[in-house]
Length: 164
Ligand code: FES
Ligand code: FES
Image (tube, helix red, strand yellow):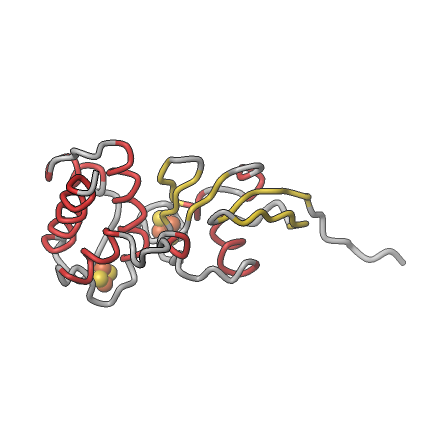
């Protein structure tokens, strides 16, 4: 009697500068692979339906909600998660600003917020408050009321601009 074998694909990608080549079931999402297979649990699992933004990462330079992306779509991708943001000099300015401006309460939305904010500032270093609010409208927070989060992103923007 034959037993059913799990179908897998072989796929390579880079996460936070480290190369990975894995055999993985093709129905898994990037979120599941990051959290369950690579144990990078900083990326949060919220709605799993593309609506809350808790799973936001940067893939090939763009912010994406990785609960809605199958791992096969990440072939040869360059992925950045919250774990890869801290540099040799310490916390990224966005991480520090979220602390300094009390933009974190339960923290569940925070990694996704910060990754989205990084993508916004990478694309437009001079993003206005309105630009930031517009770009981050798909990232939901049930705790803060958003005011401190926007303040933190603006503070990080100013810090980054001052260092140029
Ligand atoms: Fe991906 Fe909510 S967990 S958008
Ligand atoms: Fe709790 Fe945003 S700080 S969901």
